[in-house]
Image (cartoon, each protein chain N blue to C red):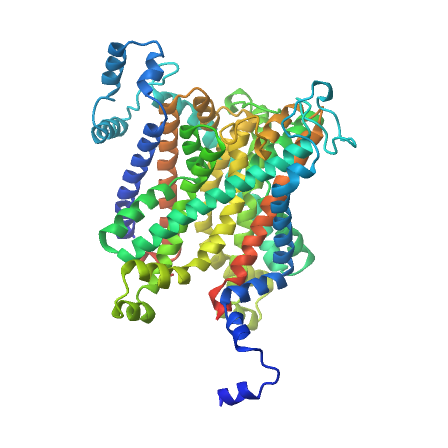
Length: 300
Length: 317
């Protein structure tokens, strides 16, 4: 009966296209583009990524060149967002700061996700003492308030772009691992995994080819959520002098420097403050939208 | 209930052990030789060896950890590299200021978060809801230190209503103490209220769809009474758990807020100690904060179990 109904439907698409349409991620992507908030925030985030890539070149000024005759100048045609206490162009530095924020956040998220997802699947699939040991270590890391752990690690490793990313990655590992382990515990008892075991699939193959694709969607939500958190914490670390070291501009360190001149040069704090808030807001809202469109109840 | 608390306490043992290992590892991850740092670059090998022996650095790592843990359990965290004073005393001196700020910040977050969350839920999908939920989403993106910088610029430097930095103790004058506390605490509360607003709103909306609420409305109870007696009472149970998360973020926020407002608490001390490379002081402060945080989470879990018997009896979600 159902077959009949399908056959009668006019204008069926070619078989290859139908197969692609059935991909849940493609469906989720389409649903995301149909959500006004998700769609707008996606464009904003893409805009920031483009600015991070080409912005420092577009600004037309060098973010590092000091100019003693242009210290703390207000916005002008030459410096649309004014200059800082060393006469450096704030627009170029904000663009460069966006780039550093994304580099730190993305590398931390990728590193954290790689370690967290692989150990999470391994722990969940292995069970027994391996799971107990791995998850107890993560429980201990999880017991720390996240920002405080990042501050502790960054303090130990010292300031630096790589160190800031490393601190954030360590903080994120237990978050990814917990989510993936939970998913693995559910998936490993399902029929398709048993079938793969009966067919003689190795443990590595089962984890990588069968379980991993079925536990990634919650990690994707965590990934976007963590991006917002990473941008926020990187800026906080830099604000405290523990993140990106000078002369590299970070939105957080620009705010820390700018606050000393807040009465004399309010534009100094305004630009990085507004950009940072907009970036975190867009990433947060995007992660909400991604969570909605990847909800398994909606996918099926 | 006693069994539930005992079980939860037992579960804490591995977590606390793990936390101590992490804190110890952080101390040992510091690049360079701590003995060289203390003895100075010109120290002779003999002096370095003596310093290492004195600090226990010549022992195997597990032995070092054991000695450190034994000391920590006795309350002996060693002495500060910078001024030679016992670390625990230095930390305990700063605790009252931090507790004062964290409590006031949490109060502000609750006072702002709950009522606004309730209003947003009660008037869902109206201008009020969009205004409150939209502002909360936007405020979630504003870092606490940015709020601090803005507050100082507007309320201290422009209007002169509050002192821009520092703390006045309540013993030195209640009015001055309130004025010095208000801005950092409000800033902290404002930064953490959005999570409470969001969670309270969603929790109430979930409960509004329950059968018993429909029954209460159907039997003709006034809306206000249904909200107070049936909805709020049940909606607040999950909100209690979110308080734990808010408190965790708040502790991180306190460290940053203290640095912005030069509030003389543990946060400022940690930042200064990092600058001085006084790692013992940093790690001890971290350890104490995490232990307190773990026990507060335990308290919230127990409270949750008390409010919702399904949790402590293991039959609930």
